[in-house]
Length: 276
Length: 307
Image (cartoon, rainbow over all chains, first blue to last red; front, side, top):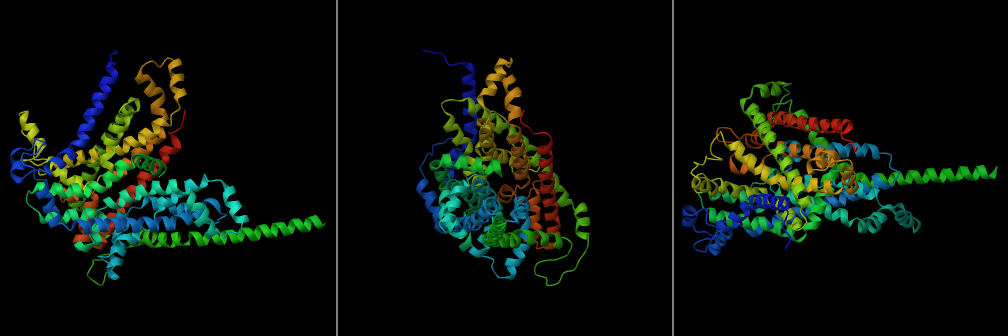
């Protein structure tokens, strides 16, 4: 038997300790979601509930929050945002990367400026405009400001620059129009960049609270974060069991997606992160 | 002679082709340009303009007030408090999450077996709904029934009223902020670490860098320069943009002890509907982001070089 070097042991211990601290909130979330009110008050440190109360807590969460509506809204809003972002960004990035485009430099300046401006900076005028057009509380107001993603343009630009020109020349010789090239040559070859961007986009918009909080005041259009906020406000007391159950349901979709597509996820973040 | 004519025709054709390509490019970029003007440039111009007005939502009329809003900002105690709190929060969250992120990345990099497992665990908070996890933290921090204080009382330490007391609330929020961003920084550092060529470590070894610490300062740290700069900028910007946890857990309280920049802007603009005044605050917020970006470029130009 070989002895494990002390250095490795210390490293492993440190990593485990850190991992435990990262996981603690999840462990308590799951444990508390299964506790009765009295359990929560008397034994906050025991992880296994004395009386299994999962069913009741989940029932309460589903009864008090229109969970299906929230998740559906989240899917619709994130889906539409992603769809438009890609639809708008790919042709633009292609034009900047592969065509003799005299405004390419100017576009680059616009993109760099755009990267600097978060929704928090444009929210006030956009809110006033949506209010004037009576578009508050609608999918339009939730989606429209994000249809343009300079970040997407930037990412696809990097990706397209690395693509060989021969493909495009061959397509041109075949008599394809530029739009045809984008649809039939560029898009099928851009999947790695598209999935990486999808992860970035969905995580960002599934989690966003700021903009939905501003333009939505009706539960019918609430996204998951907003719905959870309403639930917490309505449930004012200390019914942490039901609250943790609701939290668990809302956190689950993205976490499960992450666990399944972990490698892509991390690739996506590094790809988008490091080049952004 | 004829060859010159031919060449002239060819260049005509090339010019024609160039022009048609340019036209195609404009068409392809047109939707992006229109949306960029509509949803980014125009609103930024509008926010700067509104910052010079006394516009309030619900009132039809407004007038230009020059720098009145800005003059008011300087003496506004809430705004000053909020700038201060945002700075304190950033000064805690950014450095701690960067150092921890680097530490975890270095440890994971050297761990042969459980690498994938640890990477998943540390990254989990990035993929989780922060609004949801904030409510979990609220439970953990609960002064009477929360597990953290229960644990402390086991050790005989009286636990503080984490999110409920004005002298601890900002630190409690910082803990959540750090918990959330360590994994993100770790992933970025890991990408930077894998990009360092192995031969450099071998070379450093030959040159007499025997201990791990020597190798770190001789090879790892300088080679990580660009990554570190990027992580620093993104960590600071993210910390300056803290909003979700504050809105969910404290509403800026108690006693404005956790009032942060975006929360103050949100309150002024969207709750009290003083759009003009909130716009002036937004301009300050934008200015902070611009300064951060310029700093990044300056450092990038001067210092961060391989070798």
